[in-house]
Length: 272
Length: 349
Image (tube, rainbow over all chains, first blue to last red; front, top):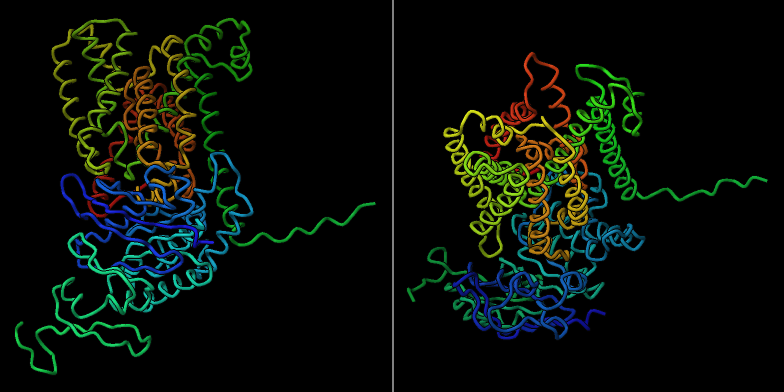
């Protein structure tokens, strides 16, 4: 079902005011796959994600959702196809988990429409998938970081979009919760065919969970392809200005980056 | 023959919890509504002469009751209606701003919109010496212009927030000094009239003053209520709201215009009744609890505050105080508390 939705950035330039952050970037998001975007701080990753999700209008070029410029489509219609989890969403004080997740149904509701069975089912399913069913009556304020992130993902899932964009969904989480969230997104992709695009900080996790890996540097797309194609010592050096060795991850067989640094290297390292 | 009652499947915990919370919010709002009605009735009954509910009801129905028809029908009824509608308008407009900007300090009476209305009115009375209707008109235009100026000064890439509040507080201080300057130079006679524009008062309420506000409220409150769902989504941040299908800029513009116009009409009719717009939302939030729209509860709380403060100001003390003095005494400590708290941690409703 989701293979029919396409998301393409055509030569987009993005910026805030006079400052250009992304300059003439092309990206085709493979439908039904997981795409992760990596890059150094301030390279334009989040800005690109904002443009894809129609929060930021390109100064040049277009973002095309199903072949039509996303900025000319009605907000609500886009919200039924494409969901977004920003880096730090806000919750009003004291709101209960169930009421928060239910707000994910907003794009499917009309002004005075009643809460329908379909809404109920979508919320139930989202809670179940994220393992938050037991939290429904708890206040969002009192949850742990990992629980809260799962609740936010549940809200995005309740929206039932075929494309889901996430801006660093694992930040502030400890390693076990990071894996939990990424496994959950993989489940979603495999069972429902949801197209997932996420910005990730951790290179190794990005490589492991991506079908399609995109490396950005200075507002440009440096490389895009399978993790094996993209994640080479050379790319790492160009993106992060850091020397590294890339080996096969013994668990997944995907590429894994080992930074060399100035100390602790078993072989003597000369200054490049 | 009676059939056994159909066994309904037990509602899921999700549904049960959501229903329970919604029902509890409705009960709390209904309680506020009953209190407002009681205070409204009380405002009609008490005064120098007490009239029972029966007499008051007959007057309201339009029957001729000796004595009561004048006292209740001409003096007390417009005053009570003014208190009710002005309070509700200030309450709903206040909570709209606080919700939209995600900050309890963002109330129109804190960020200078009421001050704009006051400054224009005082200039109209003292300097230009125009008549009452024109003073009201000037106040309404000035409130809208003040809001526009604050918005334009604070606007950058569509991001509003703390900057808007700080600019608003600065503008409020500027306008307050304009008011103080004009008042110092005013003749004693004008001072009396101008005072209404500084404290807020229901004194001298006539149907001529009350009706424009009632009409404005009947038009503008539904506009705000229609946006309440979108406004609630804005609490999650502009990005999340937009991803959930809210047209952020359009929603914001609609509610700003409607809320500012409501504030302007309420202020034109009753003066800037201190802190009602500021207090109604947070009190309503405590009363009804989280998770739903605060517009109706805040409107009821605003009406409750004004009616209660007016009753107290008229009857509880030796001297009669205008309603704004009483609400000012209530609101000031809360403002200090919020400023202290917001300085420690980011505040929200």
